[in-house]
Length: 77
Image (cartoon, rainbow, N blue to C red; front, side):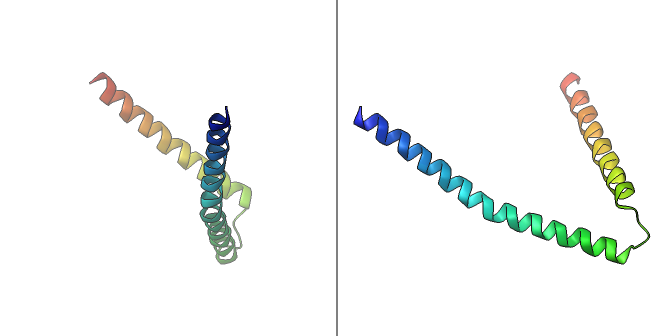
């Protein structure tokens, strides 16, 4: 019984370590992306943020559709 409790605690501790290890790089990545977008909009003052985000989403959707189609061709071929 005590061993089971110790294992569960160790698993939670490992999980927390992973979360802590991942949170710092994720925060840094968010900060870098925020700076990149801020820089983009400062250099392109005439751009509407909503229009840019719509174009980014369309581009990502198009790339995903292309990957899905490629995968479908390989699966059937």
